[in-house]
Length: 161
Image 1: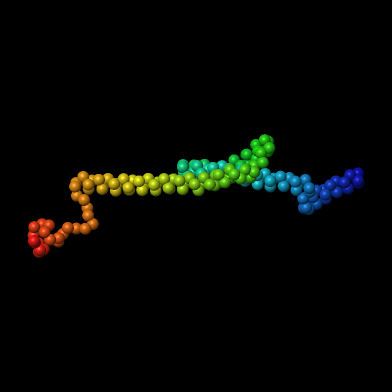
Image 2 (image 1 turned 90 degrees about the horizontal axis):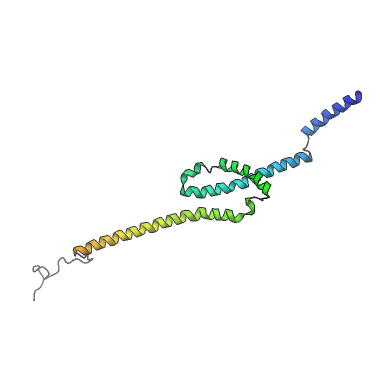
């Protein structure tokens, strides 16, 4: 019985030492896997986050859906699916990130340029319409005025021959 008590005391001391001491290789492996899962989830979360930022340009109300929290949650749920099918994650597809980032800049540029071109066309059409109205009245605006020219109105102080 004394040996059994010693073994029990030794087991208790070992458990306390393991709990307070450096992590075991098994504990280190579990921590590493958990950290990789978090990093992988963060990487996957970037996919809907970037997609949502592009879509929100067209429909701002989508910003409430593609939040950081929702995308992080989606990323966490994507990790087991990616592991099941052997997908390495979006970090292996940098082209997708480039396309989405480029779209994030190009789409607003196209929208603004189109709006400016339309505004210029409308201003030009308005100017052209005003010009046509003036021409229809038979009055042609001239940068030089005829006021004060001798002999034009039959009077004045100009010389008559």
